[in-house]
Image (cartoon, rainbow, N blue to C red; front, side, top):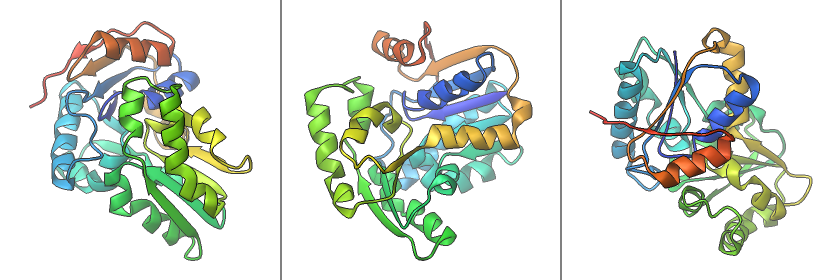
Length: 252
């Protein structure tokens, strides 16, 4: 069974891409809405949360887990693989890195993701001559979680965060957080038209289809949140285009 987890609702962008390609695919989704966002937490705390999230999914029967959180992907994958050696994990960073081309690559993400330097290291492993321009955008996650996607305030904040990247005239921009694809239209306005925008959900699903196609089978679709609410259900329903009723998840 396929399991998917994120610090909140941002991982639903992975679910949306999964359902776009495989509408009947079965999975369990866990959003840790009680403790979101992870991006402003310490690496130690993120690793602890990640293990608790994965354990919940494994206890529910997950055998393959998609880590739909860049902060977890940046600092906790070794811990997850050590704790659950029989589980196959897919993270969101490697697929995005492999999709990025150009002499100048921009990366935006949470403080934890950008602070880890993981994107810059991975990109330079591929091409030592690439120039990487990174920018932490800590307000993006709460704006998305509040569904403030089209607010004037959000547009101003996006423009302010992206100005350094715009000045550098990057060839591609990696959206280093699964919340950020929900802001793609706003982000696009703040960039030159030629800039290629790389969203991790699409890149991740390319990898899953290639390496774990056997997991993409018809089945039930269940949504768990550590702090379920009518607001969370409304956001999920709007994003996914189908009625979502989250179930409370109790983490060990």
